[in-house]
Image (cartoon, rainbow, N blue to C red):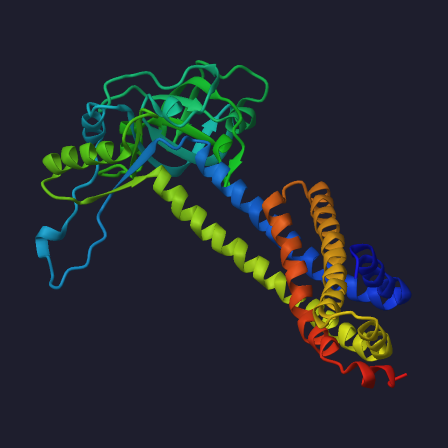
Length: 399
């Protein structure tokens, strides 16, 4: 049997039963479309979340107070953790390869100005906060490098707060009331928008020392340590640990590199993407059963044709390959149609709901097509073997 004859026989059967072949192809297409659509949304969310977290840089290390530990007995008075202080942040700045060590805490408070009042998020930070987390100032300046423990009552406004309190007027130099204390406005931040549900524009930034007084706190919520991009993360982490151990006497703090958080988050999102893809893959099983049914019927309908081919010298392996080829052609066409449907529906959803992130990697598309063909091959094995094992004489008499 020549290759040309093989192709004609394989495709001829599908053309002879267009409706049946079309419905079988549609079954595979629906399964592939479901897989592509769900994995595209999953991958889009994956990239969106990682981009949101990494926009502040990947060379950031978070230092938080407290250490999670399991102990067999009560630790009594020795179990109290020492809070992180502004002095701790100043000490961390002296570690080699550290660019910034910025203290941070936050809370909510009423802000009053121009006869208007608004409840906003108040961030207590250091003078390097904007440089450490890549947040730009649109007008004026960010907090100056005052004495970190007794900074002046200065404030930089988020763009939304500035608009709500001052409208189009210039707020620089104006006085505003935050939690009963007077602050002078020295700057306005560029619009940053929402990041994972947190609106940075609806915030104000004051010195960390002032925020400790405002919220009556003993210590910081976090210290952002930014190291040089080419620095060894492990060495910087070791340096942070040594400095804080010397200051606190024991490890009552938690050090978390940003890259470590991103790696963990990425692995979790990968599992979720695989899970939603597997959920859509259930539809492929239905398509595989459809191919198995159609190919079994085809063997019964073409018994005499099989007998004739065998009488003309076709080997069992060629008969088997003929039916496997038909099954793979059906699934391959269904896979291609499913790819077009899945990608098309995904892009349509993104166009209608612009906030929905959709991304289809070509590796997913190629894998989906290969899976479709593999399902067709697996579904066609049993009917192909049945056709190959038919006795030629019995097959010829089966008209």
